[in-house]
Image (cartoon, rainbow, N blue to C red; front, side):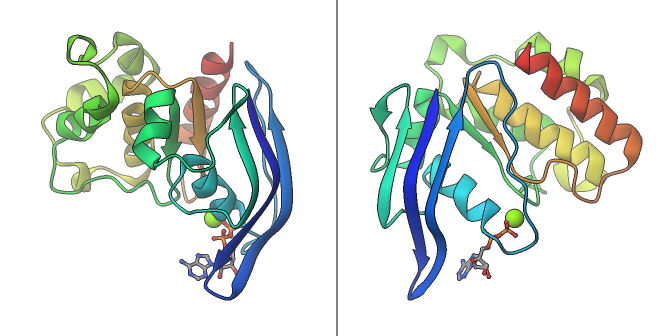
Length: 180
Ligand SMILES: Nc1ncnc2c1ncn2[C@@H]1O[C@H](COP(=O)(O)OP(=O)(O)O)[C@@H](O)[C@H]1O
Ligand SMILES: [Mg+2]
């Protein structure tokens, strides 16, 4: 469903990606591995439209999305869970989740039960400030916020970075559930 074809990406004069290609098949988990600084985040941000590419193409369901803005890609169903989670610390958990509504038509703007089935801990924390959650809870919130927009492609950047093993397991289960 996603095809990255031979892309280059630059930061000014510095080239971060050179001729990168990748195919993502529906109902499969696709992993990008590599040491620090090889360009994993740059690739994922390019897919979500947060950074432009200087060569190549990105196709989603066969349509060239290389020039679309991030919100247009989100509307097509591409959701990014960024490295470092980027929770809004002063907004409540509920408000953080509701930011996912922006791409949805008004009648579909409700929190899906599925989100709380996957991450039950969030249900009891809806009124808490995002910044008061633990790292693991923030990661769950970041994934849940992406799921609120009912994406077709979920792009996770370092979803287990700095997180305790029990929560890593929960996140793994959630990802496998979504794939199935
Ligand atoms: N905003 C930026 N400005 C300039 N260089 C950057 C920027 N972001 C990343 N880079 C550089 O691009 C390269 C790839 O970084 P990144 O995509 O973050 O790698 P990874 O996620 O695999 O650790 C690194 O050399 C990094 O220093
Ligand atoms: Mg990274």
